Amino acid sequence: MSADQRSRNNVFAGLTLDRCSERRFDSDWLRDVEGATNARFLVLGPDGKALSQAAAASLRLLDLGERHEWLPDSTPTLLGLDQDRAPYFLLTPDSDACLYLGERCEGDYQDLRRAGTSMSAFEAGLFAYARGLAHWQSRSRWCGACGSALSLEWAGHRARCTNTACAIEHFPRT
Image (cartoon, rainbow, N blue to C red; front, side):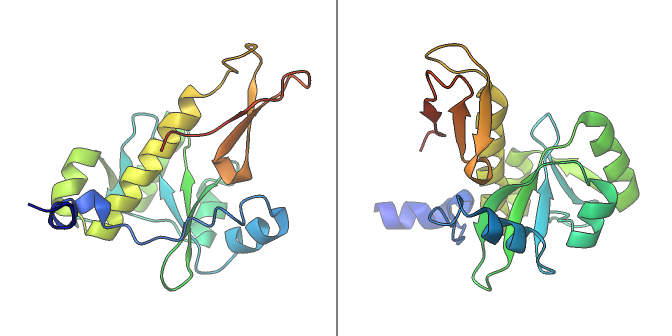
């Protein structure tokens, strides 16, 4: 079987998303897309499960109003823009906020394995991408060179050492 045929069978490889790597440093642009009316926010709990529709096999993405009402203090990470240029973001609130949100949205939290068998290729790929990035962010808290704290930059895709004498940049694995 060719690599092309194998990738069509991998539901997680179906993500067609412009990750906007060339725009992540532009804070004005990021503020604009985060405030766009068509922005959508994927919520991941501390256990790596995603908020999903309780009655359907799909993600429960928050719209801009819901995000501001229910998770105003959660820092968003840009995932990218879909084919219609709608922005997608990742939110990783604490356990209590996730519990509240699940009740409020009448949603459920689904693991990645189950998502791969029940969600569309776009949603399963979005979930996998968000989970990988959230995993890196949660485990990249300290500089491997000097031990100082790291600060997330570039819409959550780069971590910089806060020690000015070191200032090493750290990136997620590819």
